[in-house]
Image (cartoon, rainbow, N blue to C red; front, side, top):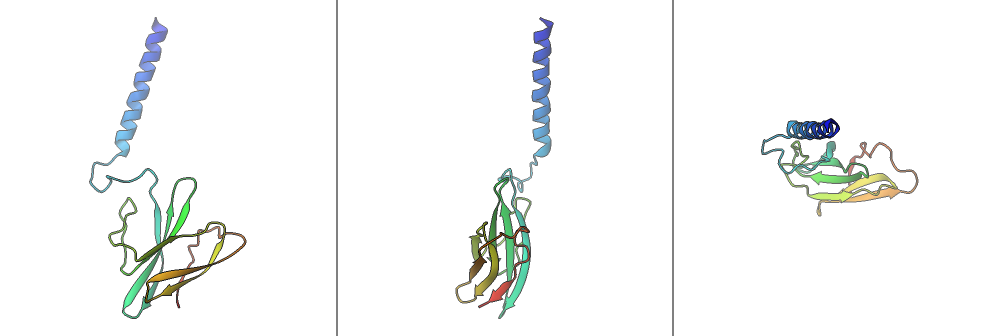
Length: 136
């Protein structure tokens, strides 16, 4: 009988440790509500003044294991909260092709669209953090 009590006690201790661990990782602030388990990594990688507007190029890396790379263009400087949400909306966003390397990012000022040019071959291993905005 003592063997079953030991197993029961072990299960209770495990459950308590799990609950305490989960509660210690959570934050009751309204800022953390809605965060996914895998928070995106966001970095402003380039800025470009065109006319009277300053554009910001952001590289967003999303996902846990199978990461996707997303380019976003802002016409105001974005700031990101701890969930990687921006205080302003991007004017353009598109996923990068993972099996190719980006050679140029051309900004069409009239349409506020980016034309992304790729080259075949080995993909860029440093997640294209060196990309620059070029005006078309």
